[in-house]
Length: 58
Image (cartoon, rainbow, N blue to C red; front, side, top):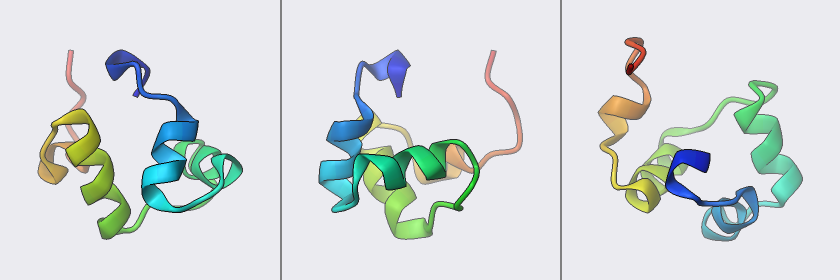
């Protein structure tokens, strides 16, 4: 999200979560659910399919 200049606080607001909860998800402690990925995809204009792709973008 840093690439898109979107802070964890902004993501948290859109997901109706705390910034700490978003941080736990980004650090892999808690998995994102599909609805959360959909919201993030819309924020960064990236399809959910790309967010969950196992391929690493260069």
